[in-house]
Image (cartoon, rainbow, N blue to C red; front, side):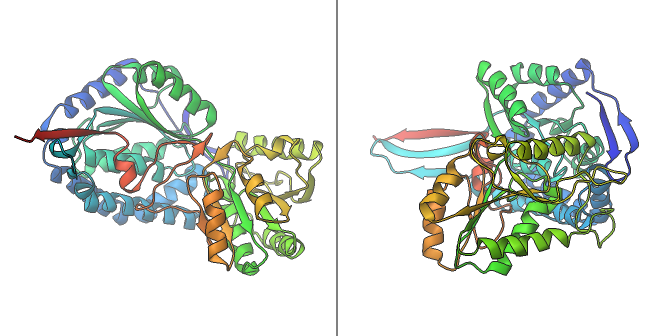
Length: 457
C-alpha cells in the first residue's frame, strides 16, 4: 500500500511516504497503552480539554495553509476546504466546552439505593479513516475520545498522507502527550493485527463496505467494539408544494459538493410527478452552469475527483447503468483535460433491475425518479441497502416530518441539504453502518458506562 500525494488536478506526484514497520506499530501501541494506564487518561479531564482548545486555536491560525493542503492533496474546491477546516476547529471547541458535562455522573432512581452511571475510558482505539474530508474525519473521532481519555492509533487513507502527518503534528503541538494520537502508514494486515492486540479495545472506521466488513469481522472475532460509517445512497425528496428554485439550488449543491464524493450528498432525487418536468429542466440548467477547473481558482464550481481510479470507476458505473436501460439525460463522460475530471451527470429511467438502482455513485452523478405520492416515496426511499441520511422539501412541515419518520436513515433534513455540526449525531443504519459520531452520543460510544450503587441500610 503506497502512501503518496498525487495532485488530482495536475497528476503530479508530490511526495511518497514510507510505510511504518511492525516495530513502529509496537512502539505506537506501547506508548498508547502506557498513556491509557496513566493519570492523563484516568485523571482530571481539564488537561485534556485544554489540548483541544489549543488545537482549535492552532487550526484557526493556519486555516488557509491547511485548506490549500487539502485541495492540493484530494482536489476539493478551496472554499470547501476552508469550510472543512472551520468545522474541524468547531468540533475541537465543542468537546472542550461540553465533554465534562457529557461525561458527568448520571443519577438513576432506584428502590435498591443511591445509583448512578459513571463514564470511564476503555483503552486504546484504532481509527481507520477516508480521504474525502482529510481533517474532519480525523477530528470527528479524535476530539471526543481524547476528551474521554482513550488514546488512538490512526490509519488514514493512502492518498492523503500529508494531511495525516500534519494533523498528528498539530495534536502534538497542542500539548497532547506521546501516545494520545499516533498516525500510522500501514497495511491491511497490520490493521488486522492491531485489532487483535489485547491492548486495543475498539475500532472506529469510515470508508467502504469492503473495509468495514473486514474490520467488523476481525473486531467481532476478538470481541472488540466498533463503529462503522460506510456510505449512503441518500434520497432528496421534492414534494409538489416545495419551493422549487430552492430545492434545485440546494439539490445541485448537495450532489456536486466535494465533487459528489460525500457520503451524505444527495444521490437519488425523488420528485413528485406534478413538478417533475419543471424540476428536471431547472436541475439540468444548474448542472450545465457548472464551471469545471482548477479547485484553487475561486470561480471554479466543480473540481477533479480524488484519483484516477475514482474517476475511471465512476465512468464504468455510468456506462453500466446506461447499458442496463437508464437514460443518460446529461453529461456522463470523462473530461478531456489533465487531471481526474468527470462531467456532472444526470441519469433518469433507472429501474430496479438496473445495478445503478442500488449502487452508490461517489462522484457528480444524480439519479432522478418521478413519484406519485407519499407511500411510493417511502417505498422507494427505503428500498436501499443504505440508510445514512435523507432530505425532504415541502412547505407542509407536518407532512414532511411524517415522511421523515418513515424513512429508514440515521438522519433526515427538511428544507435544506444534509450536513453536519459538532452538536449533531452522525451515523446510519443498514449497510451505512452503526454507531454515532459527534454530539453527546459520539463521546459515549467508547466509554465504560459503569453503574455504581450504594445499597440502602
